Structure formats: structure tokens, C-alpha cells
Amino acid sequence: MSTTNSKKNQNLKSFLLANTSEVSIFILLIILIVVGSLISPFFLNSNNLSGISVKFSYYGIAAAGCMMVMILGGIDISQMCVLGVTVMLCGVMDRAEFCAAAMIGLSLLFGIAAGFINGILVAKLKVMPMIATIGTSFAWRAVAYLVSPTPISISNDFMDVIGYEKLLGIPVLLWIFFVVIVVIGFVSAFTPFGRKVHVAGSNASTSYLSGINVVRTKMIAYTISGFTAALAGIIWAAQLSSAYPNAGVGYDLLPIASCVIGGVALEGGKGSLVGVLIGVLVMVVLQNIMTLLSLGQYYQLLCQGVVLILSLALRGAINKRKQRA
Image (cartoon, rainbow, N blue to C red; front, top):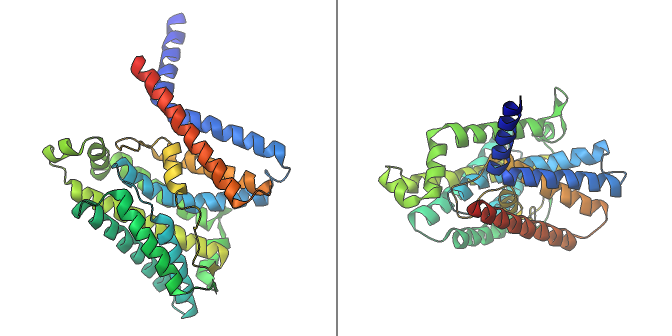
């Protein structure tokens, strides 16, 4: 009996050591939920929880694509700007009376093209990922304002279905989120491409010797990141029924921060989708608590920055302890 208990304790200890980042960030999420419920009677209100789920859906989709890039040791700062252009494209095409299929299809094609451009800059032209995606983020934000400097109302039956309708009691936008997460989770964990992403992120030089086409792998990863950013933009536009050029402004680093908080290594090679999604929830819940306290956006950014720094400091301390062990 004691031997069985000892094995169970050993297995639990091994699990906690292997998943320290996910466990610690999950504990932080629980603490935030408890704090939110104590400081505001509206936190657990169904309308408030619905608002959290909406933000979780589009930020989660964007962060899932960003994770693929970061596991490769890259970064994509342009996601929220791609989202902004996508939102404006939806507005302009709706005003021009495009059908919903054309509106969504062309918006997704833009996201794919934007991600592909990042992939060319980083993988083919060897531009530093941060510099490349900062440059494209400036360009895409300018394009968003050039498309239309003023907000545009969106009135489309199919977009209303995405933004407001439910299927089997669950909002359609959450169904879209679930599908995307399942697909990316499967690709990341169970496909040759997913294994190439992790191997190339761990050691690019060894990957070349193993026959992995690192350039192509990076280009695909950045294309996925652009696609998820555009899809998040479509959901954003559908839920708000409007398009405005500053969509996503102030939250450019939120997908990246969610990935880092969720355990994705900045140097690449390590990261799990579960950890990333918990990281997104932490950021969204923290943002929601700040809103309920009527704190401005600057305070929200300050708190998010503090959480990010503390999570990195905690991870550094944990890694040092593992090395000593």
C-alpha cells in the first residue's frame, strides 16, 4: 500500500515538475477569478462571463497561431494590425454589398498573404523576426486607416450569425474557436509539421542535418499566424457589427504575452497550446477586472505588464531550481 502511494506521489511530483509553467499559471487564473468575484458582484454575472468568452475566442485564436511562430524561435508583432485591416475589409466589403462568402474568403486570403509576407522576410530574407513584424505592423496599421479613416457599420445576416447566434446553446463564435483550437492542437502535437516546428525551434542547425526544411517550416508557421489573426478580425467585426481602423490598438502584444505567460519559451522549442490558452484567459480576466474597477487602459496595460514580468521571473527561478536538482 505504501509502495503504491509512493509511486503515486512520485508520478504527481514528476507531472508537476514537467508542467510547472501550466500549473503555476492555472493557479494564478484561479486567484484572479476569486479576486474578481470578491471585488465586484458583476464578475460572475452571465453577461460579464459572456463578454469574457467573446474576447477569449478571438484573442485565443490569434495566440494559437502566434504560438506556432514562437515555438520556432520567432515572433509576430503584426497580428493585431492584420486584425485591424481585416476588420476594415469586412466593413468596406459589407458597404459594397459583397456576399458573406466573398467577404470572409477575401479577408482570410489577406491574412494568409500578410503571414506569407512575414514568412518571406524572416525565412527567405533573414530579417530579424521582431524587426520584420514591427515593420509590417506599421504598414498594416496604415493600410487600415487608408481603407477608411472613419468607422463603418456592418449589417450582414451571416456575420450576425457568427457574432450573436448560438448552436446547441453555445455561441457560434465559440464553435469557431473550438474548431480552430482542435485543428492547431492536432497539427502541433500529432503531425510531422508539428514535430518539425518543435525540432527546428530547439536547434535549427540540427534540423538542417535531419533533413528538415526550416525555411519552408517558418513560412508555413507565419502564414498560419496571419490566417488566425484574420479569422480573429472577422469574429471581432461580426461581434461588434462595426469596423474601425484602430481595432486592436493597445493590445498588439497581448497574444505574445499570453504565449509567454503560458509557458512558450522565447528562445523556441517549447510550448503547449493548453498553457497558451490559460495564458489568454489570465490576460482577458485581468483586463475584465480592471474594466469592472473602472480603471483606464493605461492601468490595464500596467497590470498586464507586471503579470508578464512576474511570470518570466517565476519561470527563471523555476528553471534555476530544475538545473540545481
